[in-house]
Amino acid sequence: MNVVDISAEVREAKSRFGIVGNAPALVAAVQRALRVAPIDLSVLITGESGTGKEFFPQIIHAYGARKHSKYIAVNCGAIPEGTIDSELFGHEKGAFTGAIATRKGYFEEADGGTIFLDEVAELPLTTQARLLRVLESGEFIKVGSSTVQKTNIRIVAATNVDMMKAIQSGKFREDLYYRLSTVHITVPPLRDRGGDIRLLARKFASDFAERYHTPAISFDENSSVVLSHYPWPGNVRQLKNIVEQIALFEAGNTVTPEMLRPYLPEAATSFTPAVSIDGSHSYAAERELLFNMLFRMRNEIDTLRATIETMESGIPRDIRPFDATDPVEEPPHSLVRYAPLSRLYPESHVTQDIMPDSSTDPGMTLEDTERETIRRALERNEGRRKATAAELNISERTLYRKIKEFGLE
Image (cartoon, rainbow, N blue to C red; front, side):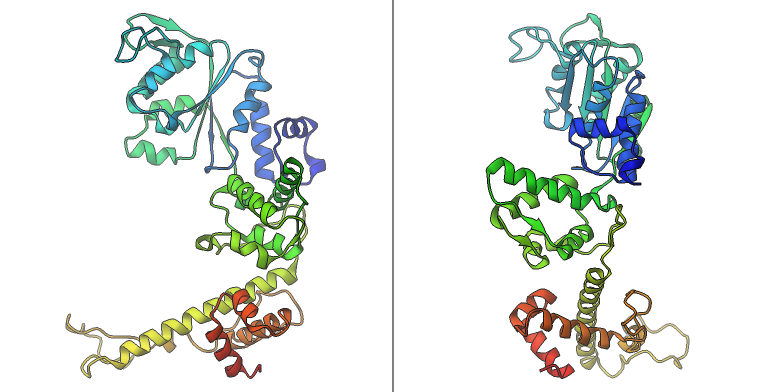
């Protein structure tokens, strides 16, 4: 979907609330919020933590009939279980220790307006029963009171929890779930938003430079590809955090993949590339990433082969490698048979149809790919072996051994 395909109303809402991106799933979520805004229905917003779910109840309130009334956002997960009922429904003087005066709750304060219940799945079951009554009849009772009060509010809730699992495990009421989710809006994770990642990175970098009066950073094409390949488990919130770190420590520089990687947690660097929304694509950069991935895979295989060969060398004679001609009978439980690793990882693995460059031989083996990856990395780093080893994410000792093995001195 291109920007020209987005309605003027959606563009206006995105601009008003600072929503950046043109991914179809994101645009669809904004359109859904705008469509339901004038209709006084309960809405449940779901999505992973850090995706920006908090913008959607604001859109619903601002474009609805209650826009001139109060909007109150409540983080249900941040309020202790012992005081959550008091916070939401209020309490009478003397209802509990510390209740020195009668207090209005959020449902009373927001009467006529909208209340946003973030992390609604964290509500205790007793509070869920009280909330269900508000949704069904608009009635509630303050803590320590016996008087039924009425409220006229619209409830929008959000959660990053799998609600079906929460219901099955008895942590969330099924009847409340269906009351809350009259309309359901799903906010997509950042890893599924393709080209939005680059747009957001540029925006966060520009905002940081403007706010703190520092020289702006920029991202080269290869670093933009790295950003698109990263899984972003913390979504937009994590991207903003990392870009601001880079903007501080690399002020005024053009960010390259080598500069970028130290800021990305290594535990989550393996990811299938996101699809580009704007149609742009860098096959050269993607090919380099595939070379590096295959190279690391080959090193892991070599390590595993060496480990198993070491294990096999110490196996007693009565515990021998498995042979296809052996009888089919089950071996004694005290015996362990090892299949030769060569059967699991043949030397003739071929990397066909994964690199679109016509100059790449589709019959290259993993060994050829490994040699080519090292050669190119050495060229990029002008023969500096320490920098080459760092780029390939291997030790210098391993790199020296590979250079000698492949005759790349």
